[in-house]
Image 1 (tube, one colour):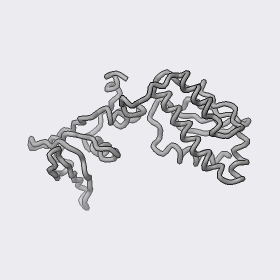
Image 2 (cartoon, rainbow, N blue to C red):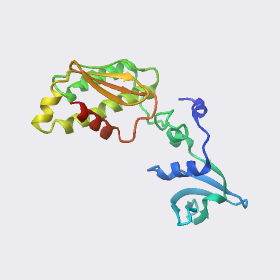
Image 3 (tube, one colour):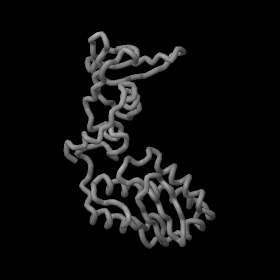
Image 4 (cartoon, helix red, strand yellow):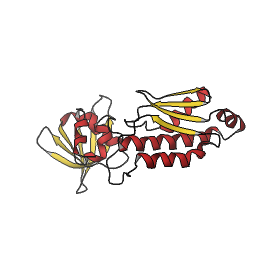
Length: 217
């Protein structure tokens, strides 16, 4: 992905951006400029709200100094590692962080992988069909792979007992379709998963799929 990914970024308030950075599991280096002209570069340690609803920030500088300041004193937030924050800064328009570790998965490789891994969903599964969903972008193909892996995990949970195995045995085909919202439907032995494959997948995709699948099995 080239630098054009910046065009997907969406304007957000400094407060919104700080909360997004704070929620990241990995440390993100940022620079915070304050109204008095001072600035701090480092990582966020904590964000708290007091009884008066005043929000305070605790930051660790690169020199291992700890800073405390109020959220309302911030005039500018600079993300020093935007490639690690592309999902959040684009509000999901970009589906995953940009990294050299992202694999180069072609459409043919994806289809071969799905065909080889399909049996993990059950011996009765004849097809995991992706013909009705976008495979143009690498992110789309990686998301398709992640959806399969999430479904595989769900099937493993659902089929732990005889009742679950019997219910799942009625499905012999899985179809992915494009949709704005995640939906599951079973009709004539076919499980259809409708999903916005070009956007960031839900953080708890397996849990969501399991909940929706149990409703319709």
